[in-house]
Length: 253
Picture 1 (cartoon, rainbow, N blue to C red):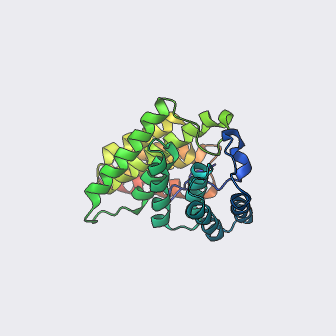
Picture 2: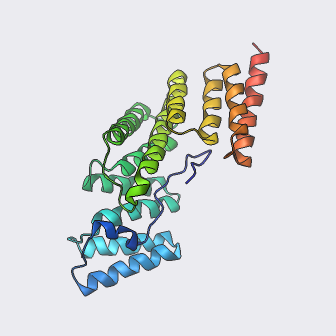
């Protein structure tokens, strides 16, 4: 799965309930089974609003369902498809209420919060702290092993943890940029690259170098981003824009 260039896209795509069989939750009644089937049908149709409605139906009418962790995670993924940050944050918080150590929810809430921050927000300091607390706790949980995320096959978990770590560092970098802590922004993106190099993060590092007035480093990072095998046209355009800007600013010094 790829990170979005301009919005740092989130990962928790809705998964069919069959993917959760390893957790062995059990259906307790025919009515619950029917409600769960509605969730699965909505998820397979790609209708995020219908999926959220079906999930809410299960959670409201079957409070003791053993599928709650999986349903909450699915809802968080469905909310992301609606492009409604407030709804994503609400579901991420519900996941964390159910399991404070849920790594995916922590990273999702960190990056959602970071993506909505603006320089002149009255609550900027509060949100910078929130992003850092969420992301650093997620990184700590990743280092300590953490539990396999709901819906993720155990053999896929090591690679997924790397992607979660990259997302966590990217969220921290985004908050640093809004807070004009550009040296810290550079360091955060470099940490993300140390976990798993990608053209997207390298391009973002180039922009961070521009912010920090490290123009030669920005040009070098942009060139690296454009040369990486996973660089899309969008990434290349973004990296080229950073290189052009760095070259212009360097010449104006």
